[in-house]
Length: 325
Ligand SMILES: Cc1cc2nc3c(=O)[nH]c(=O)nc-3n(C[C@H](O)[C@H](O)[C@H](O)COP(=O)(O)OP(=O)(O)OC[C@H]3O[C@@H](n4cnc5c(N)ncnc54)[C@H](O)[C@@H]3O)c2cc1C
Ligand code: SF4
Image (cartoon, rainbow, N blue to C red; front, side, top):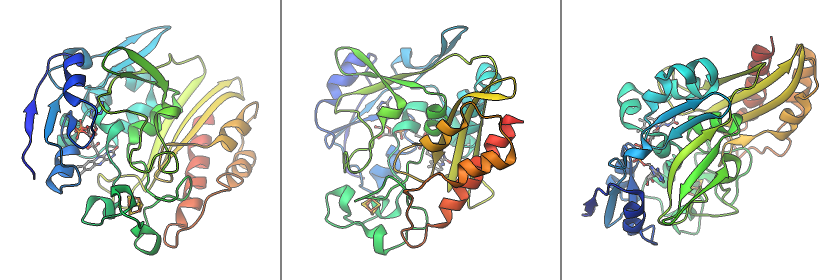
C-alpha cells in the first residue's frame, strides 16, 4: 500500500474541502471494507484518506409515518438489517441487507460505502491495465466473463455489486449528496451511470461530493416487497443474479410495480417491460410468466454468461408470484 495522510474531520464541509477536486489524490473512507482492499492492491492510490465516521449527523436511521425512511450514509449494514421498522415495512431492504456478507462486514460496512463500492471485476481488482483503469482493452470480452453483465454494458462489462442499491431502486429511493456548499437530491435511478456515460466512475458523484442520506418514501397500503439473491456458493457471496420487487395491490389487481435486477448490468437494472406490464394485472402463473419471458430483449451473451438471461427471468417470475399471492 502506498503512503497517505489520514484526516478525520467532524463536519461535512471540512470533509468535502479535504476531499478536494481530484479523485486520484483524496478519497472518502467509511467502514473501509472495500477501500482498504483497493488500496492494498494499489487500484486506488490516494495521497490523503478522509475518514467520514466522525460526522455524527450521518449515523441516524429515522422513520416518520407519512414521510418515510431517512437513512444516514454511515448507518451500518447490520443496523439496517436489524432495524424493526425496516424489517416490518421495507422487507426488500431488510432482506437485501441481511444477505450481505459476514457479520464482521455488516458491523463495519456502511450504507454509503455499500452504494459507492467499486466494481468486483477480477481484471479491475488485479493487475490488469483495463479500460476502466485507463488502458485500451476490456479483458472480459475474450477472457473470463461468467459473472459479467448481460445488459447495459459496453465498452466495459462490469456488474453493479451492491445488494442494497437494487432493493432501494425497487423502493424508488432518493440519494442526498453534499457538494461542499449545499445538499441536492437525485433519484437512485439517476445516481448510477453506465460505462457509455462514464468509463471511469459508476455514479454521478463529483470529486469532493459526499452521500449524506437516502430517503425512502413511506409504504402505501397494499404494498409488499421482497429480495432474492442467487449465489454461486451457499454461504455469503455477491449476487450472480438478484431480484428486488415492490408490488402494490388493490384487491386482486396490481396497481404499482417496480422490478429491479442485480448482477446483470453495470447499474441496478429497473426492468421497464415487467414493471409496466404488471400494472392493472390480476396476476397468475401464466400471465406473469408471459411478461417475464418477454423481458430483457436486449440482453446478450459474452460467451460464458448467457445463463444469466434465463436465471433473471425465472427469479423475477418467482418473486412476483410470491408477493402477489
Ligand atoms: C468478502 C466480502 C464480501 C462482500 N459481499 C457483499 C455482498 O454480498 N453484497 C454487497 O452488497 N456487498 C458485499 N461486499 C461489499 C461490502 O458490502 C462493501 O465493502 C461495504 O458495504 C462498503 O462499505 P464501507 O463503509 O466499508 O465503505 P468503504 O470501503 O469505506 O468505501 C467504499 C467506497 O465508497 C466511498 N464512500 C464511502 N462512503 C461514502 C459516502 N458517504 N459518500 C461518498 N462516497 C463514499 C469510498 O470513497 C469508497 O470508494 C462484500 C465485501 C467483501 C470484502
Ligand atoms: S469489464 Fe470493465 S473493469 Fe472488467 S476488464 Fe473489462 S473494462 Fe475492465
